[in-house]
Image 1 (cartoon, rainbow, N blue to C red):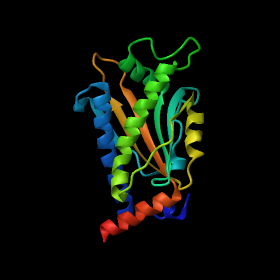
Image 2: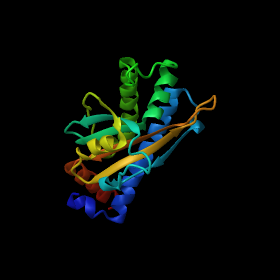
Image 3: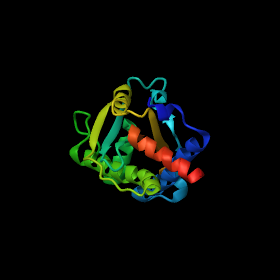
Length: 210
């Protein structure tokens, strides 16, 4: 972890928590709009800032498959941004948008139209989460084309960690309750700023506290 990531002051941590909270609110509204749900059918809870090393695979999930949609951000907001879902949640999301039996092909992989839908949803949700970060620094950014990773949970999380250099992740956990009753769609947005961007955010925190 970078030095600034190890030495967060109380006000700096609160500042980052507020960014996560604002990002969660924006992302929850975006997910409700995508799924055509009322606002009270979508819940969110902030999940950061946390250390990258704290992102672990839950008990019993080592052999379960997950989906990650990953973006690299440009030099204005340098870092990496991901949408993470369990495979079952990704299928439910695609079927909600495109109809039943549209998510996977005969080989158990996501069909092209399903992969495209997941990438578009990821682009909308991650952009919504990043908006308060961009506003805090008065910057904009252009993400890379999305990269979809469909693999077991340990591999998907390892891919996220491989792009980190600040040691901290900002994030939010999302849950959507569908009607008629069905398994809820749970997802997580994770933003790993690089060391330079984290330093800029901490400087913004100091300026706001001053």
